[in-house]
Image (cartoon, rainbow, N blue to C red; front, top):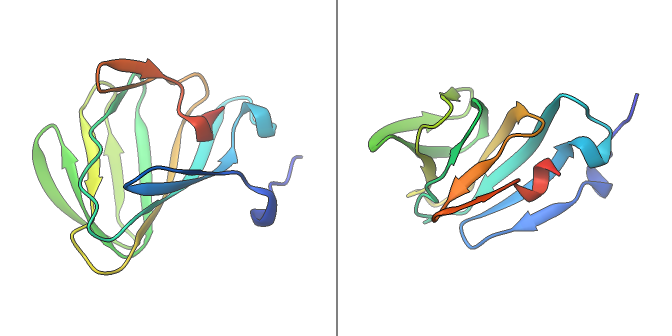
Length: 123
């Protein structure tokens, strides 16, 4: 059973967030990808969609989930279920970071800004 130590988990930085890769094919997972997302204070939503369902569980802070154009407040302990094909993003209008754990199936493709890709933490 592969164990991903927090100290060796890869991180991926974007202007609005930092992603920490946990479970993925390159780290031993065959069916499920999992990563931690840290959305920076003041971040606007980076709208995207996936070809499979995405599930997020908020672990710290507060954010605004934008799901197909509708805004929903989210706080630690809440879960967000994003259907396949839905446009989704997280905004953080607050002064503290927002963190969530994200899970989706291996092989999921993301669509963002007219491009398709496999998210780096899912590789």
